[in-house]
Every structure is written in C-alpha cells, then in structure tokens.
Length: 266
Ligand code: HH2
Image (tube, rainbow, N blue to C red):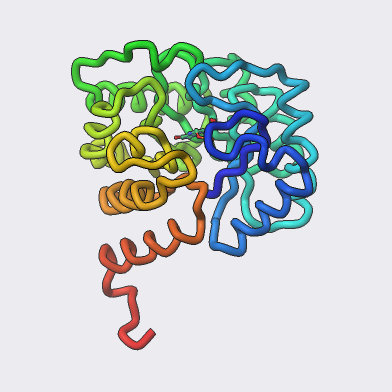
C-alpha cells in the first residue's frame, strides 16, 4: 500500500503533493514501482495534528482521487475518519476506507461502508491524534490491542460489513511509546491469528529513528526491517512511502515463506 498524503502537514511527505499534478505523478510512480493499492489522505494524523473539516479535506483529496480513479486501475484507499469524505471517495471509485478510528469517530461511517460494500481498515489508536502521545499506558499492550481489534471487527460485522472486507491494523505510533511499538511488532501473529488480513504502517515513523537514527527522510532501512518482521508474521499489507524498496523486500520475504512458488531458474 503506497502512501499519498495530500496535506500541508504530514510528518514525512507534508506539502510535497498538495498540488494535484504532483500528487498524480507520485500516484503514477508508486503504481510503476509495484503498489497494489494507494492510500490517499487529506488530514494528517501525526501527534498533535490539527483536525480539518469535511470541506477542506475533500478540497484536498477530491481532485486527486477523481483523476486517479479515471486514469489508474489500481484500487484506491481513502484515509479518513469522516463518513461524508468516505462516501464521496467511494462515489469516485475508492475501494477501501482506511479509518484510523476504527468506525468510532463518525457514527455514519459503518453504514456507509456496509451499504457500499467496500473494504475497511480498522486501526487501533489510543485517544485522538491530538492527545494520543500524552503518556500512553497499557498493562499488556499487545493483548489489549488484540482485544480492541477483535471488538471493532465484531462491531463492523454487527453493522453489516462482510467479514472478507475487514482488515485489522495495530496502529503503530498511535498512542504508543517506543517500547509499546516493539512489543506489538514482536507479537503481530496474535493479531494475524484473529483471522482477518492484517496491515502494518510503520514507514519512516519516529520510533525507527529512535533505534537506528535518521530523520523522516532517512529511515528506509529500519522501515524495511519492520516490513520484513511484519511479513514474516503473516501480515498481508504494508503501508509504505517507499514502494519500490518495500516491494523488493517483500518479494524476498514471500520467497522465503513460499519457496515452492519460486521457480529455480527465474
Ligand atoms: N499511519 C499514518 C496514517 N494513516 N493508517 C493506517 N491504517 N495505519 C497507519 O499506521 C497509519 C495510517 C501516519 O503516517 P502518514 O500518513 O505518513 O502521516 P500523517 O498522518 O502525518 O499524514
């Protein structure tokens, strides 16, 4: 899953793709590099980010999404917590709603997803982007996230969303310390074992810099290490800013996991 933030303030690519032509060029590039879905977002969720209203969010993502849906066959994911933004994006052709609130912030979201039959990413977050990094506390972070994701999946099913449309994400960095993130990554299999496809988005996040150094533009190796850990635990979708490199790393993971699919003389 390639990340395309059409925002002025995203932590790693903020401002780079605010212009629709630049965003479309990046979309094209990520497809060329092997992305199988592109996640378009118009509201930053970095710690402390200011919320935006529906009008502003759609003003950012609408023009890009409309043109991308017409010009590309690759599925589009809309990264939003707002049912109205999701509904408009689905009308334009989006196939996935990536809701970092797991259907909790907008009471209409579950209905929009159920009625339209799109896929839904349910992500764990403690609090809101504004508050989430203020002293996050857990007794057993991996176990608590597993329980939360299972409950949100049950809520989605109860709202009429089909099981095969549900994707679960532990929400790396969303209300977690460095050590919380590491415990979660070491126990991803517990989430995978819930029986839904799992997604991990750790690309360029600050905890990687805390371990191996580097600012947002210099965390590729650590991001690939996390992608590898996730893939080997059975995670099916890696959300990344660096599609070409991640795709290559995942091809090697896939070959290790499934040597029988790897022709000898390829
Ligand atoms: N992380 C970010 C945004 N959306 N969605 C899911 N499902 N999982 C994630 O881990 C995730 C996400 C944060 O990264 P980014 O989009 O690059 O930054 P920002 O939120 O500042 O736009």
